[in-house]
Image (cartoon, rainbow, N blue to C red; front, top):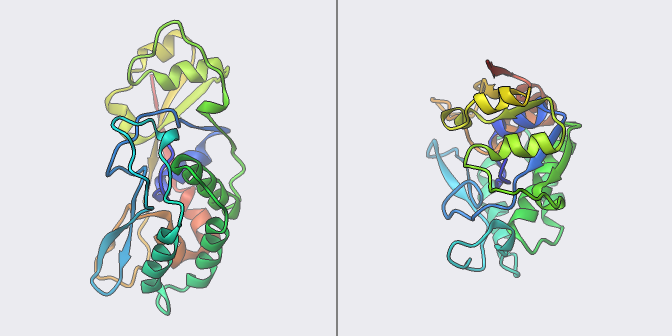
Amino acid sequence: MQPYFFPYIGYFSLIHSVDHFMFFDDVQYIKKSWMSRNRILNIEKEEPFYIRPTLIKPQYKALLPTVKLDRNEQWKLKILEQLNGYKNKAPYFEEVKDLLLLIFERKHDYLSTFNIESTIEICKALRLHTKFDRYTDYNFWFEEKPNEGDWGRVIAKEMNATHYVNSPGGESFIGVEMFNQCNMKLGFIQPELKSYDQLNKNFISGLSIIDVLMFNGVSTTSGLIKSYSVKWKN
């Protein structure tokens, strides 16, 4: 999967569902995507809003590993200020703030590195023991560039995988035929996205993992992550 900025809980369910999770970081950067923003809750207005890092303006069609973060890192302070809306309301505010301070105290020059390392740090807190690496850690060489939707299978085959799991959105463009030909099972994660008390009349699902942690804490969030199934294709 592409490395996202404080992704939603379903991303962590996907991580939990596999033994080996690879960050597919060698992709084109897409502005206004989950690569560089996510949503948290404005409790007073009962609506979500975006948090995001400040980037040094990427070049046209830049690859994600080349996208740099602003060096003054004021965006980290801004996010912490934005999270103050949870203070005195969300029961696990201090616990989550400590985790974010641990993440923010480290220097990162590149967006992809921050996204990857912050996700791994959250997984450590949640006691997810999946093996992590990134596509750019390897010197893969393919005679022909894989078609869109076939990258996962080709990489998984190189890794001698027997099963490959993707996000729900992948079902619309990843076909099972090629997986069957190489005796590999193809599955799609089906996260339940259970509701929890957000101090709102109406529950807003799919927010950043930060929101889930604020209202549930590390222990309960770890259980929520495990609420999923995998839809295996034949």
